[in-house]
Amino acid sequence: MTARAVLQQADISRALTRIAHEILESNRGPEGLVVLGIPTRGVELADRVAGLLTEFAGVPAWSCPVGSLDVTMYRDDLGRNPVRGTAPTRIPDAGIDGATVVLVDDVLYSGRTIRAALDALADIGRPAAVRLAVLVDRGHRQLPIRPDFVGKNLPSAASERVNVRLAGTDGVEAVTIEGGTADEADAVSTGGPAEGGAA
Amino acid sequence: MKHLLSTKELDAATAVGILDVADDMAATQQREVKKLPTLRGKTVVNLFFEDSTRTRISFEAAAKRLSADVISFAAKGSSVSKGESLQDTAQTLEAIGADGIVLRHSSSGAPAVLARSGWVSASIVNAGDGTHEHPTQALLDAFTLRRRLHGDAGRGRDLDGVSVLIVGDILHSRVARSNVWLLATLGAHVTLVGPPTLLPHGIGDWPVTVGTDLDAGIAEGPDAVMMLRVQKERMSDAFFPSAREYAAGWGLNGARFRALPGRTLVMHPGPMNRGFEIASEAADSPQSTVREQVANGVATRMAALYLTLAGGAA
Image 1: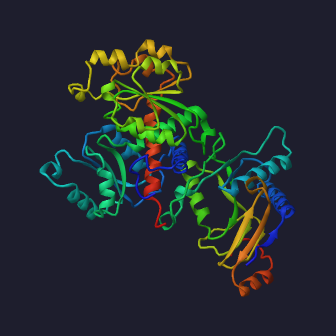
Image 2 (image 1 turned 120 degrees about the horizontal axis):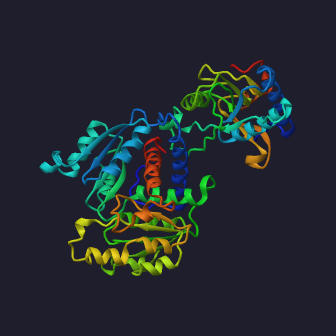
Image 3 (image 1 turned 90 degrees about the vertical axis):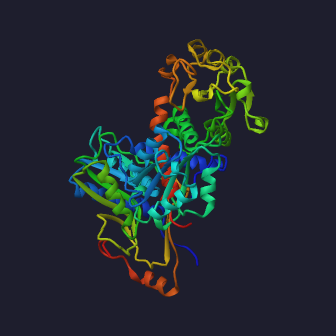
């Protein structure tokens, strides 16, 4: 079972650039945007998206507020796994009340992490709106959650593993997929990109 | 981590991991909504065979902030005073459905007995046993030190090279013991100072420097001075010099406090005997961490309860 590269470094950069433009487009500018990454790799992606938003918005003296949102304490599977460590939550000083919060994560799968993130957000403040940006949407949703901005739709088998590695966290940058049976792997290679995120 | 019984059994990585979780817990305690849903549906019993208002309410606050149901069981006036054994009490709590038992007991080793007994399936957190250990106190002390010394950059770090002077009744102090093991594991240099009669036998095997002269210890310019509480009830014992003699020799009075470098932190587990083991001048100074220790105690106990209770089978 070998790992297959699905996105290379240049693909990831392009995807994030497009996501940043889409965020500005749908928000009609940078007004009220706050970008929060979900640890671990969502945090690095959020930093990069926020940097691009600052650059593309072209508003003098505006830089996109960015932070991190740890969802560990809100997970619904804590009792099913060995206990996990936590990660810092950093909310920009201005807070999130009335803001348009863009949550950023690397892979969207069951949707349970995002469910936990929405609960965590509610304990911090009341945003005007919450959007979701993910680098990879691999399908298999277990909850009625759908991303607003997707880097790549990657139909996958549940038995496969999608690994995201980023320059800042891992030293190398690529999205790879590994595992699964031959049949399922075929299904992936012929699946093609789907429109929209919701599975 | 199924139980938290002592700091002696913690390796450095585990201890740093607990402090990191405590860091994140402390951050949630700055919010308007301090409650987390993490232990919803779990029951924590505070089983206290010794009086301790501070430790009990600290654990109670920690459990409640994590949404656990808390039952406080003070042994005084209970069936325990009618002669019920630890076994019967524990089995009663098991039948009630306790997921965690926070145990304070006058017998050293009682939490370990309960954890190994098979009487209960609950996680056991030691809240002080005899003269043995008080692990959450040491963890909150280490957490307070790391916070003061490194701030937000402390995450993932130990206390390598930090010098800590612990002063007082070492012989009877479970706080001192838990701190000695934990601080040494985290790489700190610990010096113990107290009256010769209040230094335990076998202290030569501990990973510490031992002395009886507080002024000499202060002259070393330690990063932190930790004053132990003098238990007045022990003053009548033969171990103790007179109260005045003790305060003169081993109290952190104004003159000694002023002899310390400005960066030296002054710590005390509380409750303080002001004017006796610690002068108000020291306790109320910016160098004092006494109130932070109390606040950090809740965050640290949240971390301990989370790590022992939240996970499923490994």
